[in-house]
Image 1 (spheres, rainbow, N blue to C red):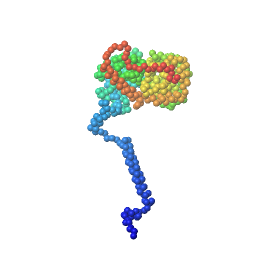
Image 2: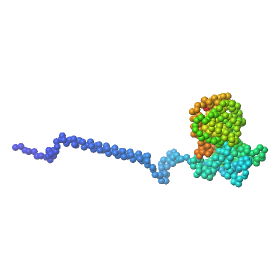
Image 3: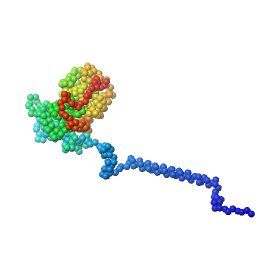
Length: 481
């Protein structure tokens, strides 16, 4: 008889389940789904971390550290003896300027003397007098600017201070250019109690006696002497200061230079042109109106008159300063393509700045001229420069200008319009602000000279020891060639 094998639980389980061919696929898919889930989870975590890092980097504003945090971070980040705070770049502070409260005889007293010389009457309060209009009004505009409260000077490159101990620079607002012409208005033969020479001597004596002048030998002082003859008697006593000048025509290299001083524009006397660009209404090729006879470098005017006065479509007239002549000059400049700018008694003249505000292309015949604000203004973009001996060749100048195409003249006009605010003393961001910007840039050199003076041994030199630039050495014939 056959014995029957007992049935195990395993065997029972096998017999009751589905055949292997149907169950294997079920168990083989489970690890694949688990692996896919893990990869998805890891990718999601990394994506969330990346988003968090992005927002933390670009949109998180850290809280300011406490004092203890600052101290500890400074010591931890000490690099070569310089703390992290010292390594940070602070926003540069404005240069601080203190304006002297000069005795009235150097400011309003000169205005009064100018008025009396022209028939005016004395007034009880001379500070109510108006400064008379003339080409050297820059001294009035700078004085008026610093006389305003600092709250009204927010756009200025320098800050006015009322405490001299806080000052980087000291401004001396003497009306030295107006002083020169006080007696020019007196009737011939009339006596005068005013002396410009005495004013200069008194100013130099007062200034060099001041505590803050003596402290640094005047290096940190700023003095305006716009007229080339202003302060001529005392310039050697004040030449260490930053001089604001129209040119260096009357100054020796040891008295004035581009390195130490600032060239400033004349105050233009011609009304600003407000018309459109173009040459349609400018029927005159070349215009000049001014004094035919000048000294020194200005002698070229006499010869230019002889060469040009009979040329077609050229207007060249002798005329002195007067209200009627200014009106005539305005009409002439506004209807001319080019305006002649020869040297005067010194290399520069007011006429250049009259030309620019008239959009009349300046033709500059002055080999030694220095121009204001050349660190930001390229004068070749709107001016024609012609070497003196070349300009005196008969027919050369007019032939050169007639070849300039209309489109080029319009380009010159557009360039002049872009820069003309730099020659406008009444513009809120014009000449005054630019002069102060130029002055503020001198401060590092001033500090150098102050410290250098403290250790130099005084010695006699066979030649002046000056800080000047050798410029105007290109030897060009004209800037169009």
